[in-house]
Picture (cartoon, rainbow, N blue to C red):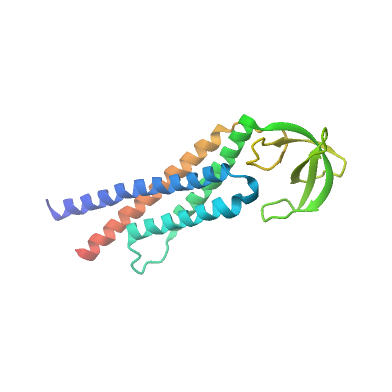
Length: 209
Protein backbone atom coordinates (compact mmCIF):
# COMPACT_ATOMS: atom_id res chain seq x y z
CA UNK A 1 0.00 0.00 0.00
CA UNK A 2 1.31 3.45 -0.90
CA UNK A 3 2.01 6.13 1.67
CA UNK A 4 -1.01 8.11 0.51
CA UNK A 5 -3.26 5.06 0.91
CA UNK A 6 -1.96 4.42 4.42
CA UNK A 7 -2.54 8.03 5.39
CA UNK A 8 -6.12 7.87 4.15
CA UNK A 9 -6.68 4.59 5.95
CA UNK A 10 -5.37 5.96 9.24
CA UNK A 11 -7.51 9.08 8.95
CA UNK A 12 -10.63 7.06 8.18
CA UNK A 13 -9.89 4.72 11.10
CA UNK A 14 -9.47 7.56 13.58
CA UNK A 15 -12.59 9.26 12.25
CA UNK A 16 -14.57 6.02 12.61
CA UNK A 17 -13.29 5.47 16.17
CA UNK A 18 -14.35 8.98 17.14
CA UNK A 19 -18.01 8.27 16.33
CA UNK A 20 -18.53 5.53 18.99
CA UNK A 21 -16.59 7.71 21.42
CA UNK A 22 -19.15 10.46 20.82
CA UNK A 23 -21.99 7.94 21.18
CA UNK A 24 -20.52 6.86 24.53
CA UNK A 25 -20.53 10.47 25.70
CA UNK A 26 -24.17 10.90 24.68
CA UNK A 27 -25.12 7.63 26.40
CA UNK A 28 -23.32 8.72 29.57
CA UNK A 29 -25.08 12.09 29.51
CA UNK A 30 -28.49 10.47 29.11
CA UNK A 31 -27.63 7.91 31.80
CA UNK A 32 -26.90 10.71 34.26
CA UNK A 33 -30.20 12.40 33.43
CA UNK A 34 -32.18 9.17 33.63
CA UNK A 35 -30.53 8.20 36.90
CA UNK A 36 -31.42 11.61 38.35
CA UNK A 37 -35.04 11.17 37.23
CA UNK A 38 -35.29 7.97 39.28
CA UNK A 39 -34.29 9.62 42.55
CA UNK A 40 -36.30 11.70 45.03
CA UNK A 41 -35.98 15.46 44.73
CA UNK A 42 -34.40 15.92 48.16
CA UNK A 43 -31.02 14.27 47.52
CA UNK A 44 -30.87 14.27 43.71
CA UNK A 45 -28.33 17.07 43.31
CA UNK A 46 -25.68 15.83 45.70
CA UNK A 47 -25.91 12.08 45.08
CA UNK A 48 -26.80 11.38 41.47
CA UNK A 49 -25.83 14.54 39.60
CA UNK A 50 -22.59 14.87 41.55
CA UNK A 51 -21.52 11.31 40.78
CA UNK A 52 -22.76 11.60 37.22
CA UNK A 53 -20.87 14.85 36.69
CA UNK A 54 -17.62 13.23 37.82
CA UNK A 55 -18.29 10.26 35.53
CA UNK A 56 -19.04 12.52 32.57
CA UNK A 57 -15.91 14.62 33.14
CA UNK A 58 -13.89 11.41 33.26
CA UNK A 59 -15.40 10.33 29.95
CA UNK A 60 -14.54 13.68 28.34
CA UNK A 61 -10.95 13.44 29.59
CA UNK A 62 -10.71 9.86 28.29
CA UNK A 63 -11.83 11.00 24.83
CA UNK A 64 -9.31 13.83 24.95
CA UNK A 65 -6.52 11.35 25.77
CA UNK A 66 -7.62 8.99 23.04
CA UNK A 67 -7.86 11.60 20.28
CA UNK A 68 -5.04 13.95 21.15
CA UNK A 69 -2.78 12.24 23.71
CA UNK A 70 -2.81 15.68 25.42
CA UNK A 71 0.52 16.52 23.76
CA UNK A 72 0.85 20.17 24.82
CA UNK A 73 -2.34 21.11 23.03
CA UNK A 74 -4.76 23.66 24.40
CA UNK A 75 -8.49 23.10 24.12
CA UNK A 76 -9.74 24.33 20.73
CA UNK A 77 -13.05 25.49 19.37
CA UNK A 78 -14.28 22.06 18.31
CA UNK A 79 -13.43 20.48 21.65
CA UNK A 80 -15.32 23.24 23.44
CA UNK A 81 -18.24 22.76 21.05
CA UNK A 82 -18.35 19.03 21.86
CA UNK A 83 -18.47 19.79 25.60
CA UNK A 84 -21.27 22.32 24.99
CA UNK A 85 -23.19 19.72 22.94
CA UNK A 86 -22.94 17.23 25.81
CA UNK A 87 -24.23 19.80 28.31
CA UNK A 88 -27.09 20.92 26.04
CA UNK A 89 -28.03 17.29 25.33
CA UNK A 90 -28.29 16.66 29.08
CA UNK A 91 -30.45 19.77 29.55
CA UNK A 92 -32.81 18.96 26.66
CA UNK A 93 -33.11 15.29 27.69
CA UNK A 94 -33.90 16.36 31.26
CA UNK A 95 -36.74 18.61 30.11
CA UNK A 96 -38.06 16.02 27.65
CA UNK A 97 -37.92 13.20 30.21
CA UNK A 98 -39.54 15.32 32.90
CA UNK A 99 -42.38 16.44 30.60
CA UNK A 100 -42.92 12.88 29.38
CA UNK A 101 -43.10 11.38 32.86
CA UNK A 102 -45.34 14.14 34.21
CA UNK A 103 -47.53 13.75 31.13
CA UNK A 104 -47.84 10.04 31.92
CA UNK A 105 -48.38 10.14 35.69
CA UNK A 106 -48.65 13.79 36.80
CA UNK A 107 -51.77 14.60 38.83
CA UNK A 108 -53.44 18.03 38.53
CA UNK A 109 -54.26 19.50 41.92
CA UNK A 110 -56.12 22.67 42.83
CA UNK A 111 -53.87 24.53 45.24
CA UNK A 112 -53.88 27.76 47.23
CA UNK A 113 -50.95 30.11 47.85
CA UNK A 114 -50.17 30.13 51.56
CA UNK A 115 -47.02 32.28 51.60
CA UNK A 116 -44.44 34.05 49.46
CA UNK A 117 -40.72 33.53 49.97
CA UNK A 118 -37.39 34.29 48.35
CA UNK A 119 -36.09 31.68 45.94
CA UNK A 120 -33.67 29.32 47.65
CA UNK A 121 -31.60 28.02 44.73
CA UNK A 122 -29.60 29.19 41.74
CA UNK A 123 -32.24 28.01 39.29
CA UNK A 124 -35.26 28.99 41.38
CA UNK A 125 -37.44 32.01 40.70
CA UNK A 126 -36.56 35.21 42.55
CA UNK A 127 -39.83 34.95 44.49
CA UNK A 128 -41.61 31.67 45.11
CA UNK A 129 -45.20 30.95 46.09
CA UNK A 130 -45.65 28.23 48.69
CA UNK A 131 -48.74 26.21 47.78
CA UNK A 132 -50.93 23.74 49.63
CA UNK A 133 -53.72 21.40 48.57
CA UNK A 134 -57.06 23.24 48.80
CA UNK A 135 -58.93 20.11 49.86
CA UNK A 136 -56.59 18.78 52.52
CA UNK A 137 -54.37 21.80 53.23
CA UNK A 138 -51.38 19.55 52.61
CA UNK A 139 -48.14 21.44 51.76
CA UNK A 140 -47.14 20.70 48.16
CA UNK A 141 -44.01 22.79 47.70
CA UNK A 142 -43.17 26.05 45.96
CA UNK A 143 -43.55 27.39 42.42
CA UNK A 144 -42.52 30.63 40.74
CA UNK A 145 -44.68 33.36 42.20
CA UNK A 146 -45.07 35.59 39.15
CA UNK A 147 -48.10 37.76 39.93
CA UNK A 148 -49.58 35.37 42.50
CA UNK A 149 -50.55 36.64 45.93
CA UNK A 150 -51.31 34.87 49.20
CA UNK A 151 -54.79 33.34 49.02
CA UNK A 152 -54.82 32.93 45.23
CA UNK A 153 -55.83 29.55 43.86
CA UNK A 154 -53.82 27.89 41.08
CA UNK A 155 -53.68 24.53 39.33
CA UNK A 156 -50.42 22.68 39.89
CA UNK A 157 -49.04 19.30 38.82
CA UNK A 158 -47.85 16.87 41.47
CA UNK A 159 -45.71 13.80 40.83
CA UNK A 160 -47.23 10.93 42.89
CA UNK A 161 -43.83 9.21 42.96
CA UNK A 162 -42.08 12.29 44.35
CA UNK A 163 -39.34 12.34 41.73
CA UNK A 164 -40.17 15.85 40.56
CA UNK A 165 -41.18 18.89 42.54
CA UNK A 166 -44.54 20.57 42.17
CA UNK A 167 -44.93 22.61 38.97
CA UNK A 168 -47.41 25.27 37.94
CA UNK A 169 -50.20 24.40 35.53
CA UNK A 170 -51.75 21.10 34.44
CA UNK A 171 -49.64 18.09 33.36
CA UNK A 172 -47.58 19.04 30.28
CA UNK A 173 -48.07 17.66 26.81
CA UNK A 174 -45.65 14.97 25.67
CA UNK A 175 -43.36 17.13 23.50
CA UNK A 176 -41.83 14.74 20.97
CA UNK A 177 -39.83 17.46 19.22
CA UNK A 178 -37.55 17.75 22.24
CA UNK A 179 -36.31 14.20 21.64
CA UNK A 180 -35.74 15.10 17.99
CA UNK A 181 -33.76 18.15 19.08
CA UNK A 182 -31.63 16.02 21.42
CA UNK A 183 -30.94 13.57 18.57
CA UNK A 184 -29.90 16.42 16.24
CA UNK A 185 -27.53 17.82 18.87
CA UNK A 186 -26.06 14.34 19.38
CA UNK A 187 -25.54 14.03 15.61
CA UNK A 188 -23.76 17.41 15.52
CA UNK A 189 -21.61 16.26 18.44
CA UNK A 190 -20.70 13.09 16.52
CA UNK A 191 -19.68 15.12 13.46
CA UNK A 192 -17.52 17.42 15.56
CA UNK A 193 -15.88 14.48 17.33
CA UNK A 194 -15.25 12.77 13.99
CA UNK A 195 -13.60 15.92 12.64
CA UNK A 196 -11.39 16.03 15.76
CA UNK A 197 -10.43 12.41 15.16
CA UNK A 198 -9.61 13.16 11.52
CA UNK A 199 -7.42 16.12 12.52
CA UNK A 200 -5.70 14.07 15.21
CA UNK A 201 -4.88 11.36 12.68
CA UNK A 202 -3.50 13.97 10.28
CA UNK A 203 -1.27 15.44 12.99
CA UNK A 204 -0.10 12.01 14.10
CA UNK A 205 0.86 11.07 10.56
CA UNK A 206 2.64 14.39 10.04
CA UNK A 207 4.62 13.94 13.27
CA UNK A 208 5.70 10.38 12.37
CA UNK A 209 6.12 10.97 8.66
